[in-house]
Image 1 (cartoon, rainbow over the protein chains, first blue to last red):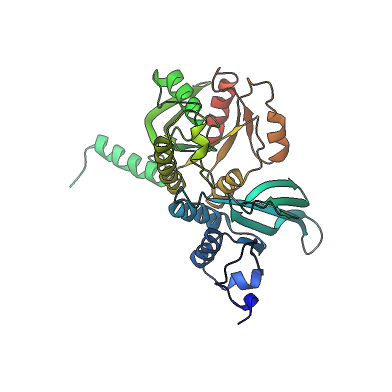
Image 2 (cartoon, each protein chain N blue to C red):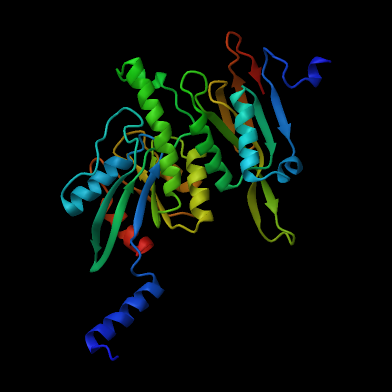
Length: 132
Length: 213
């Protein structure tokens, strides 16, 4: 089996999972949150198209707190990038979440965020590999 | 059987109050990041109005690791009274690194214990979102207000239709920029105060009466 086909393959780099909104919409809130926390706890970075609902965000924080084990998993960092959404008639414009990035707090070392730009340096143990 | 007039009047008044929700106890939750000054503000408020503090404060983050409740606080403004319970909650965060506590002189064992208790406190604080009737979201005006914890708290309050006031705290500090909080959240009521010195707390009490009465 090739390395890329195995989800259990141990990697020394940073694994990033990109999930489309349609992949998430078929899941319940609880399934979504569990899936995110499972992946982040393994050390993966999860990039989601769109955002979570406020209730799902609260559920995510709550589940994260239950999963923290002090020595190995200290929690998560969440960042979002917003985009303008114009209504059908173009009369109003409001911000919606374009992408959400969730990762282990000990990996997301340094994040610089502006309204339309996000830059992150991931901490990969001995080697500090920048991820932009 | 005919009810005496007094009981009849009380009976109908009670029903009316229930229908209007007047018998509901106002529970004002103090939410925000660790070290934003929630307990300092709660202490300021209870000391001003009932003469005693509610909890202990410290420089070490996550000093408040369980929910504290003070019942029957009454704030008066221009003849209008606001009776409520204060719910002082632990600071909400998405991560807890016990090594941060070591900088404040805690032993490793104490730091780990504090971290464990803090995780439980955060869960408790989130659960209380289902039970509060109004919120003071306390933000440290020297820090960036656009954090995930603040966004999550506000999103949940809006989704639940819970009225809230943003308290831009620590304006006594030189690097405080409460105007930044105003510009980031222009659609919400923002009151700059110093919970430590009591600066502008009268304005906060007035806004609370307006918002939560």
